[in-house]
Amino acid sequence: MTGRREKQREATYAEIVGTARNLLAEGGELSLRAIAKRMGMTAPALYRYVASYQELVDLVAFEIDRAATDSLILAAERHPEDDPAARLVAAAVAFRRWALSSPREFGLVFANPIADTACVRRELLTTATSGHFMNGLLVQVWRRTDFAHPTLDELPVAVREAVEEPLIPMDASVIDAADRGVLWIFMQAWQALYGVVTLEVFGHMDPRVIESGAMLVQMVHTWIPRLGLEPDAERLHALVDVELARGS
Image: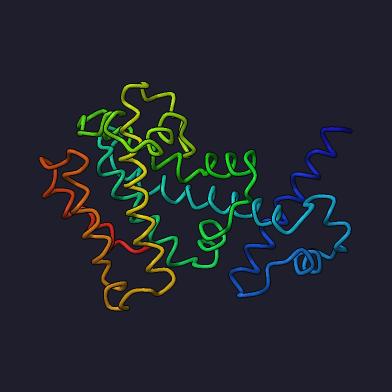
């Protein structure tokens, strides 16, 4: 009986997420009341599954991010396992493509304020599926190129503390304590990609630049030497253009 009840509960959660995504795609209001109405439930009945609006947003955002990560993985897997640089470029372009095609989903995942409590903040900052995948690719690139990174002593105090006990979506235990300065490079790489994509998604950039993808191209070109990929620069420059032209 417990197994059947648990399956029913999981199916209801899946329906909640699916209903929320449909509302977002349609431009509708994302609220507990709207979801309950669409599912043919009462709002109090829905509260048995999500206790608050913030809990609803966190649930839906996590599942959207997990689904989006599948598209990053598919893009990366067009390239060999022993070519993490190509996989990283393909995944970055796929991330941008998903964000531009699903701006409300992107906004829910990445413009969702995180509750200011230690346990919630840690969970939401460290469990993002897309972050784990992208940081995993950066680890692979670093292991191949051994690109330069600051030592712990070279970092500002706050940054040193942040890399020694990181709140980022990856298993930091795979990086030796003495090499944790490389996490500062990973954080900056994510900031560069997220910054470009966010400006594009919310239209805070010349539409001609957005349409061309030129800012993402420039970002990739800038980060190729930073990640020790100069020997592959010409190939990767061509690859980002190919990936942008690929479409969905």
